[in-house]
Length: 385
Image 1 (cartoon, helix red, strand yellow):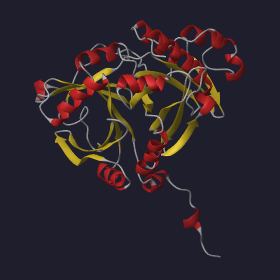
Image 2 (cartoon, helix red, strand yellow):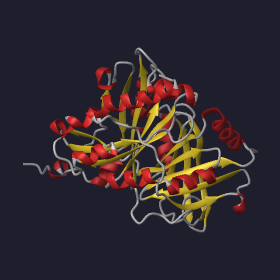
Image 3 (cartoon, rainbow, N blue to C red):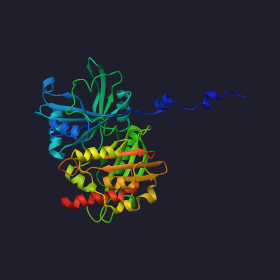
Image 4 (tube, one colour):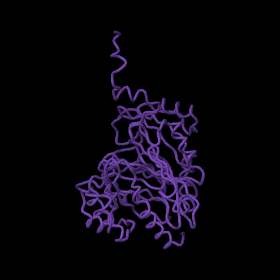
């Protein structure tokens, strides 16, 4: 009998990565264009417990922009504001803030080979914004490239193998804005949600399928995400390792304006709606963030009256979930705990989610109705429902 060993060996992690047409290492950074990066850095240091690690500004040769890099575990935020627009990049950032308010301009993804990732993406239909190029300093070399996604958002592809600087060449190490908390509030970016126009969700899902080789994780349509007044549809795409997850939302026809419609109106088009941050102690996180002034969506007590009947036992007792207004959901893989902030700027656009997972790979489907009713109450207070 012929030896078939070579054909029956299980795929190793390294060979699986080689087989992936668009391998990724994870989220590299969420990059915000803001009106005042210095104040943003202070807010996210004090209210989100993040630690400033790097800076780029006029003192170090960046005459056009100032950028502050904050981290919490593996989560990295970059806040950039324009000092005086001179180049096309500076004018873009200034125009972006004028049109959209503070918002996400870049969902940067770390990849093992930026050149190969860019070539694959462009060959499969992506719009190239920046061909691969190198940045160097005493800490090594970083290779960067960029492609366009929905609205004015981009994906910078970051290859930083062998680079040991604080962020990127051109940035210098910077001390914390304030003394960071003894225990970080969160340790990773769990997922980033994009809002797109009516009828565009499937187009962008197909984009991630074809251009980046992402697969579909979840789909929420119809009654999954509907209340008496508003509705939306959502699909989730992810890379093969599930390290990078992008839910894509679009509005659905309903009696009144949905949260997606409100976002699109006030943001001025498609963009990143919220960033979910993974925590291993949502109770401590919420208590500290509330004490620092972060406002979370309110949930009526009635939500908790029957919660234990369908969620079952969780790490946090129901009474404590009720006290802190934390939501819970269970699926076939386990359960999760989650809570959502109110928008973190005056425009009702970008907000955050704190999520603690215990096996579940879901996105809180059982909470959609309660969550969206809570958002509708805020919309009504703003006069936008």
